[in-house]
Length: 268
Ligand code: IPE
Ligand code: IPE
Ligand code: MG
Image 1 (cartoon, rainbow, N blue to C red):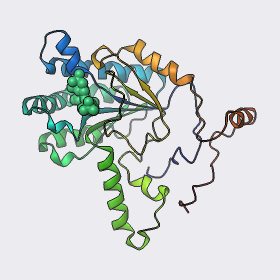
Image 2: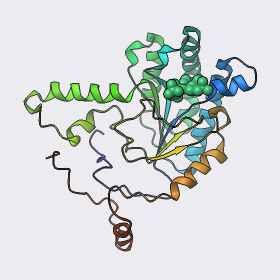
Image 3: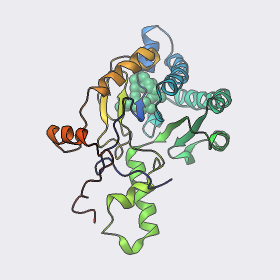
Image 4: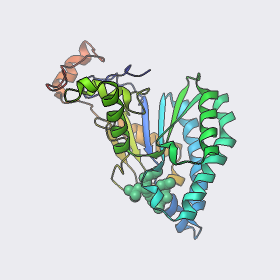
């Protein structure tokens, strides 16, 4: 449903107790394996188990959208054996998990430039998406061969092709529906495991006002307690979206959670 959600830079989302959308950079698989004198790929295998547990935990906590960065557009630079292991792991995870995801009411989406993937992987992705399309308990998005810059550029190109007469005067609201995750509200909580404090070309547009949480915990060690710590940190944040604390307190007295702020000057 493109266009259903207004950009969080323009509207104050209803901040509930639980983040509605959590986006995670699952990092640290290689280091986890290295610490155990195991090959890097053992960490990726263990990482899939953590994905399964995290999906379950998010459902139990009432999260609506979970978005996981599985493979970046830059990860092709890794050794060819590791890339091919990751591709095979993606295939087997889809085959093994899709039934369980469907039974649990999970809607699966895969976003990224799929043109680089093998046809059998793309077919599995499309089948999984079709099977689960009408589920509504949790939307699980896997970002694969995804890059935030790629996303903004593909949206820009689509928009320019659709409305050549408006080139030069596009606003945020014109672009947002063409981003690959237009079906989801922007992430409330961003988590990166593995100790690095960077975005690594993940959701560049959509993270504009997300709360950022970085943890040294390696992805294969990220358990329910780790997730709860991240959510607890989120719940202590004050999401001001440019306003002052005092204004937020006034709003709490007479809540206006979906209050639409004046658009930025250039966004006519
Ligand atoms: C994240 O773990 C998984 C992918 C990028 C596919 P890494 O493989 O980056 O693990 P580290 O960062 O080397 O420990
Ligand atoms: C980011 O992790 C991408 C994924 C988790 C899929 P990386 O390990 O590839 O990130 P950098 O290269 O250290 O920034
Ligand atoms: Mg890494």
